[in-house]
Length: 109
Image 1 (cartoon, helix red, strand yellow):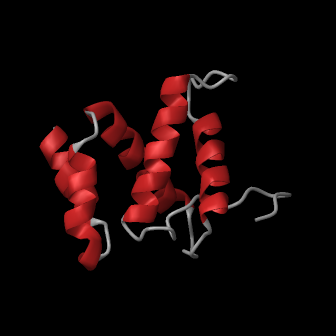
Image 2 (cartoon, rainbow, N blue to C red):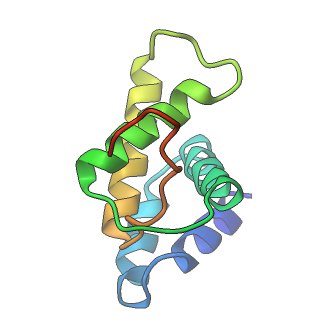
C-alpha cells in the first residue's frame, strides 16, 4: 500500500515538482502518508473552490483538520504535531498550497 500512496500523492504535485515531491514522500512512513492522503481527501470532499493560501493559513487549517478528526484527543501528541508539520511541508514543496479546507463560519483567513 505504501508504494501506491507515494505514487498517488506524488502525481498530485505540480509537474515540475513531482520528482522532488516523490523523493520527499519516499522518506515518510505509511502512517504519515495516510495522514496526508486523508487531508487531501477531506479537501476534495469539503471544498467548493480552491484558493492559494499562505503557509500560515495552511498551518491553521491543518490544525483545524487535526482537531476535527474522529478520536483526536484535545491535547495534541508529538506524533500528531509531527504529521501536521510533514503535511505542511508536503503541500508547500509540491506546489499544492491551494489544497486547504474551507474556513468555518466566523473564522478569518
